[in-house]
Length: 86
Image (tube, rainbow, N blue to C red; front, side, top):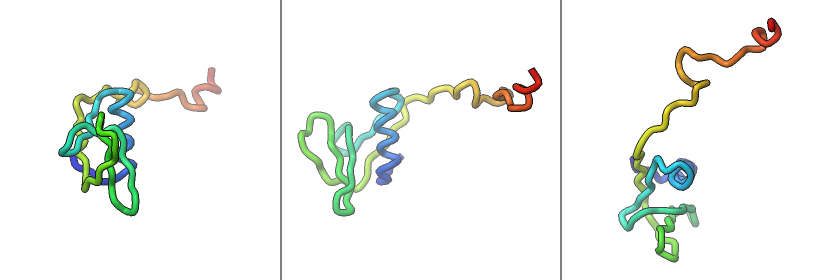
C-alpha cells in the first residue's frame, strides 16, 4: 500500500526494524527513516547518506503475525467479578 502519512510510515518502520514483518520502500530503495519538512515528505534510505523528497512510500507486508492469545476469538480475560469470586 502507498502512504504519505508519517505516523503510519513510522509504525511500519518500527515493524520493519524490530519484527521484520514489513518493508518500507520508495522508488530508490529501502527506507529506514521518514520526516516531514516544510510540508514535504522526506525519506532516508539505507546507505544513502542524505534525505530525499518523496511523494509517498510503499509499505509491503511480508507476513502476518498471529494474534496474541488474549485477542483470539473465544478466549476472554478474567473479569473483575471472576477475580472476586475466587
